[in-house]
Image 1 (cartoon, helix red, strand yellow):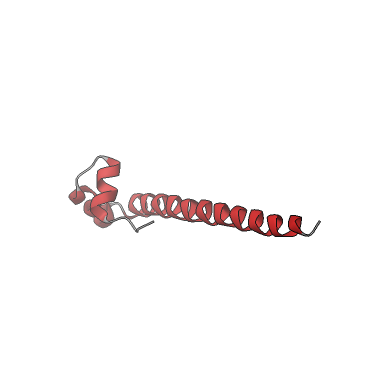
Image 2: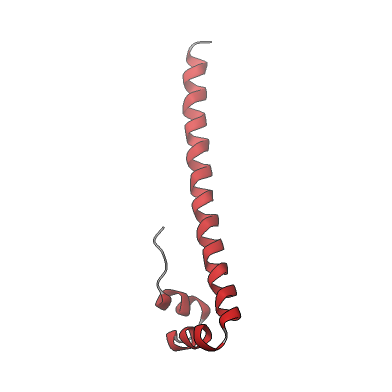
Amino acid sequence: MAKKSKRDMAYELDIDVSTLYNWRKHKPNLYRIVMLGFKFDELLEKNRENYEELLKLNQIIQDEIDKFK
């Protein structure tokens, strides 16, 4: 998953990019919370992908073990 640009973030929030920059300058706590939300979503997706990969790997290993039973 590619990191989102400020333009992508603004689009997702249904605001202008300039609003996002204004929040950064004039409302740093709001900007920080918004950025943490995007980071949370990014990490959640990354962990979901890792979990799915681990499940597949587990199944491959289990299939190999079952061959010897």
